[in-house]
Image (tube, rainbow, N blue to C red):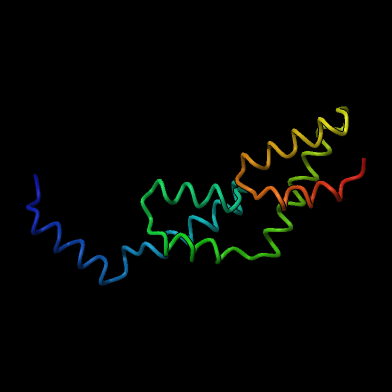
Length: 121
């Protein structure tokens, strides 16, 4: 059973009108959920939302919805955990591997470096 193009457009318009389809809400839920559960940084969240063709406006709103204090705390928590996992490595190797790990998670280099500077040598 197929639908005609006009039927699809009518149904989509009705879903948007009744707020079942809401790109802004989707982007905010995606950003918040992936930050909390997968511990992703802003850069990775922004990239993944752009792959899903979410508008730049909604991506920016979603990124701004992440609490700054919670974000800073997450960076410090991840750096601390990774630093402890690498306790048998030299300080330089610990720093390189920790930085690489957090960059892959999408966190900003300046925040990573600030958190690493707080770690004991």
